[in-house]
Length: 76
Image 1 (tube, helix red, strand yellow):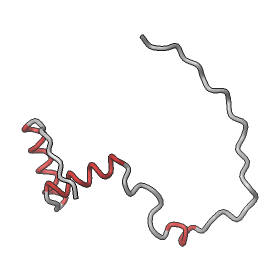
Image 2 (cartoon, rainbow, N blue to C red):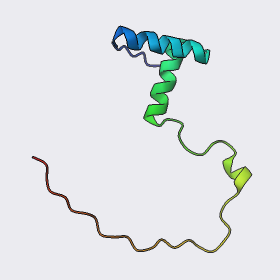
Image 3 (cartoon, rainbow, N blue to C red):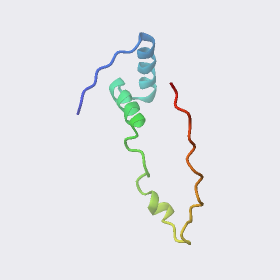
């Protein structure tokens, strides 16, 4: 497992330590969970989701025509 190091202001560090304690996690685990969530790792359908809700069994879905892409001026 990779080890990361970062620097944050003291007040942010205290807040992170407090939230980790409130969550019942070590600071390292708490920060790892924040990074994982922000990186979108594990994002997707929960395990067993399709067992509960099944799959689509109706008519095929038709997507309506899309509008053309908006052209914007370049920011200089």
